[in-house]
Length: 167
Image (cartoon, helix red, strand yellow):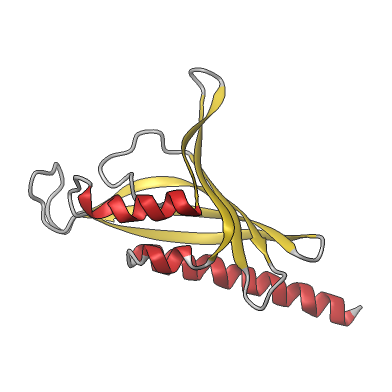
């Protein structure tokens, strides 16, 4: 019994480490390195609930090739050069059998302006960009955990420049 509890604790810690490492890579705009933390059949979604239509809306959905194409296009997007910084807290990690874990993580994402040119924000100013939760499914079958899917459930429904970057 003690071995099973230790193994579950180790799996849960490896999942938390993966989620926090992913946040650091996204903060550093190392999107290819972030994508390397994902399984080949990974799917990324951004969803939000609309009370006006009483439905979930899917704002963004990509598989690995779609995310690679999105990352390739990031330098071509019109941007205000704001930097996004994520603060995440893993609320729960649950095992789904022996090979898959699910995790719920609350996050806030801030944007700090770097240049202040053509922006309503001054250089160096930081504002709240988005609030939500990550719902992750993670393969824990191999030596290193890998994201199988991430659903970003936003509370924020009005996004400004920078919304084309992975949250």
